[in-house]
Image (cartoon, rainbow, N blue to C red; front, side):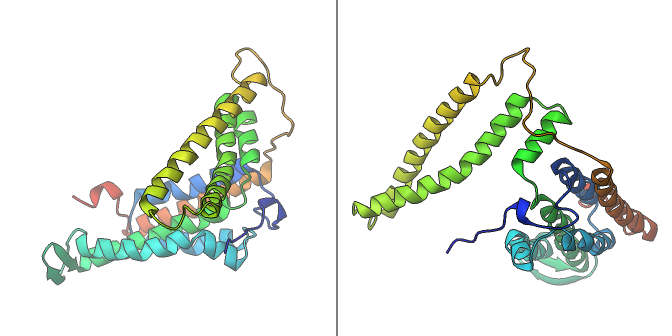
Amino acid sequence: MSVILDSPRTRTGPIVSRSALAKLGGALALSVPLVLSVDLVSAAVALALGLGIILTSGLTPREFFLRTLPIWIGAPSVFVTVSLYGVARGEILFEWGVMRVSEGSLELALASALRLFAVGLPSIALFASIDPTDLADGLIQRLHFSPRFVMGALAAMRLLGLLTNDARSLALARRARGVADHGRVRRFFGAAFALFVLAIRRGTTLSTAMEARGFGVPGIRRTHARVATFDRRDALLILVCLAISGTAVGVAVATGAWNFVFTIAA
């Protein structure tokens, strides 16, 4: 059974109405400073402060859980892996072969898992309401990215949904012809090759259509169907995200818990 999530334009909330560039900038401002250290203090402070972003993102609890499911699965895996194979410091609690659990490895594992939650959950809440078309407009109009590159990337993202539909239609067609009940490995590679050919053909057609509309022609000033706005409230969102990460880093430094990521293995 497929899960259909609401469109970003149908949600409501203070963050939903902000521009795509503000959400992208906010996610970067929130995550980049936090990845410089692996410690419990900054991760816990960032996660506690980031709850405000999650609550105002416009996502329902079910939507939020489904979108962040990889993090809920990955964080325990990170904890177990770092606990068993991390840098051994302090008292050794368990040792068997190459696996060694120590007080230091447990602390590092907990900090790594908590860091994944602190960075991933608010960032996904910000990205959930970003419309790719609005982001493309903002990159072109505000940051002056190349329209050829941005629109090409946007078109490729739009074609991903068609590729999924092609795979489903191809599977149903093969089943209707009675060739989908045996040879699963061979059928998988055959379907993958067919999808590859369809993707090339569709990409070639799209490229021709974009060239016919003047994309990539030097010296042409393009007009825009939508105006990408960026106001004070958008800047405020970025400042709030930067304040969250800055506060987390400041508290970690003040308490002596700051653990620069490149010095962990030292």
